[in-house]
Image (tube, rainbow, N blue to C red; front, side):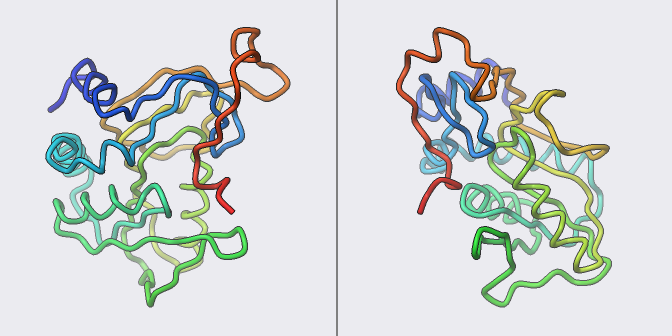
Length: 196
């Protein structure tokens, strides 16, 4: 498995770990942003991450029926984990601001579902996926992600397992509580939730 030090080196090398002033999809501000799409655009490098994560998932969950990924960020990582675990993988996408299953995708009743995404900060997207699983009367096993940058303060997911390749401790701030050094840096909004 990849060590944290090696993982961070790869993120920097692929320009997936950015520094500046970012507004995350959660609405929180941060001095760092992880653009997993940059890492995942290089399969020959990202395969070490996905293989390591899939091995962690196999150790924790013996029976998975379905992998569900939130669009946009979760699609590639969801597909890769599904391929490695040989599991059906589907994704949801936003329609009028809410996640829905489209393209003929469905979740069978009593299916054991693992949610896989690129980065978890608050877990907001993952919890939107949970609603679809509950609506289908299926069972949520837990969550997996490449990067877990959540903290006890920010995480909205309660009493569920989160498996990650990397656990990053990066501070996040509410808009009205920014440190002086962050206030002077121009804001970037990189998340897919901000796309029109």
